[in-house]
View (cartoon, rainbow, N blue to C red):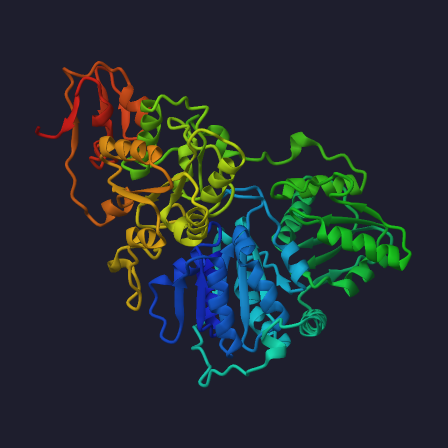
Length: 621
């Protein structure tokens, strides 16, 4: 074993390599992205690593590999479980032979956007084991154990992390990679196991699934992964925690000791899994303690189960947690919050002024909207949409423009204020159709990025085409899955695809679906893009405007040449049109004229297009 500096996500990846993983697939989504990113450029003979089209596809690729005996893992954020769950529950019923691990990173506190979803609920619904590492070392070790457990019970296993584990960095003891082993992949043709063809088959599979979960509980208990510590004297306080909250509890007790808060001896049950419920350990704690504090982020799954077990045992226990409003179902925990709960459970005063202050960096940030990067092609697209609507004499508050997930959603913020909605991957097009069906008479536009379109936008566009909806769709193609860190997607240029992969031409994909009208534009050309949107709105049927220009950050990294922009000081009136309309972070207001940060500017020319005095020009012209 070697001590190595890793992130939580890297620990998951290294644990999978140590376990001999043969297939790793997933879709990028913060806070889970770096698992595959950390493997992407490694030389891994015998192991396939891919960014899949979406999470459902990623899981199906991994699941089939495990069904023929290989060890496989797929990765996603909590929102991705929604996408993949249709297949997850099906494979959970059928089971697998090789180890199959689903890594999901939840985001209590919503650090990375989307819903504050507790994926443990999905494990409950699927009757699937879910391991929950609370430290970097546990992330590494439990990933290996997840593969062992999966093979032992012949069923997929979740590994659930949270942002504070996935994105943290520290030292972990790791070992060399183990090469995958599966010389003779084989799938037994077994209709009763691998299909749902009839009620009897599905019910038998459900029964077997419950038996596999019970076996998982027994194996976890035998390995003594959950840590139960009972105080010498019965009748006191017990604390139940899971995953990352285990560390918060230990830190809270340490703070209490430093502050000389008089705590009695406390019992504890520190869990590495919520599902399957550690019922035997829960019962021991409930029989021993008169008060139980339950510390778990988001949903009260452990707390509710403890209530039920206490009722079944006939013991009288005071519970402190979410059901008595001590803790919230919203947000992430920290040691301070846990310490408050401990003090409340013990009826002790917890003085606010003596507790360490909670640092909130956002309070020290400048008040500014989150906008697109300097040179981002999406800036030109949103400027064009706004200008087209004005040219057509529409008011901004009467034309619905639906938004979608990714960098494109920044069109909801100033200075654009263009988008009205953001729901889930690919929802922009069906929602636009729904608004029209709902009776909206004025034009409705849908916007969507290229990666999101490949992920989940195609079915919505097909539906609009089939039903002949009078709808304008603006697809913003920057060639990358940019918001999560520049991962490749099917439309990324060939130089960045894996050797065995090829690029798909998004223009041909859209045309092949049979849209009524397709116009491809360069969003740096504000005039042409505006005209294309105006024309599309006026045409009947399903119209797509494909705005194509590579992500400015990636273009800069690839040393794509551009013509620098400069300001003619004599012509600049400091009217601020370039700042107000574009919102470009490379432009600021100088003493005598606007100034352009050459380090950020890539010469897109959008500021030139809106300057009323022609004071912004290409350098040397």
